[in-house]
Image (cartoon, rainbow, N blue to C red; front, side, top):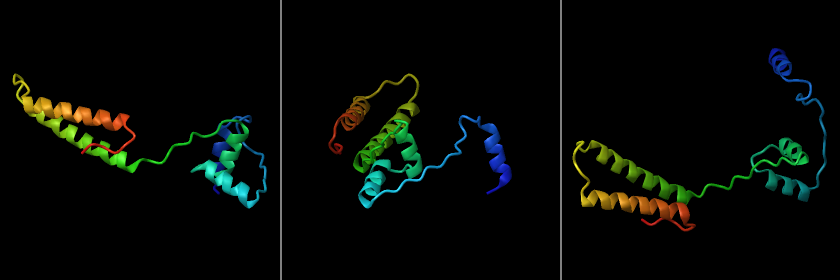
Length: 121
């Protein structure tokens, strides 16, 4: 490790914040599996340190791919609608078809945001 980099980092931290103590722990297979399940993407040492301070890292659930796809499609459709509406001349009013399309996309977006089921296509 570069001594200069190490020196710079240590000089910026106050003595209270500098972590100099190392604690080793031994776990059996079941305990290690439980630790790995609970820690998610956080490193084992970091998770144990935070757990000992009662500052558990937040658990972010895995992304719902279907919801993400649905919201992406709706977003794309809304962007097309906005682009169309912005291209209209200043004085022109919305047609019934345009109003219907906007209402439908807003309704579909609302449904996807509040529903636990897949999107309406």
